[in-house]
Length: 226
Image (tube, rainbow, N blue to C red):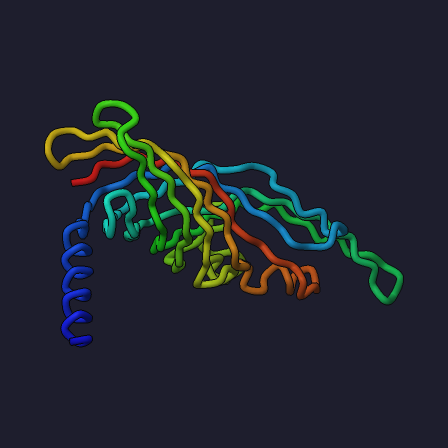
């Protein structure tokens, strides 16, 4: 008897889950104002010289497991990085000094895999709803340049940066229903890098293992879902 009740409960849950299960796939373009953050001693004088406009583009997928809740993922090609400066005067053992300085315009391209939760409101106007997104992304480096160069002093500049990166994503926006299944959306997303992207270049150059460089950015997201 207990087994029969359990079976009926499982069937009910599966039916309820299947009733809500729905996948919406779309295309997104995501221009990003990108910059970098530093974890380093003040003596190195790291600074963001400029934030740069980078581009992201790719495919997204929203998998609804309830009427107003969806697991959102996808695959995007996104460029990150800003223009940074540093300036450090090091005292040598012989009493002389060495000035270590640089101005690097960093541009790193990633394949980005978002892993997020989207929360949708009911209609706030005819065919219009709001959404809020929270989660992260796992990113793999595919290319990189410094000062618009792929090679400096015989070394590939992409090697200065780690292959993998992790982000936190926080965002929101608006969806507009057009027709039976087409939706347009627009929103803002804050990207906060969690992992150190420096592959030892700045640590070795300045002689300090405690230096970290991380990505940050705000993207304006536009897209269409089907």
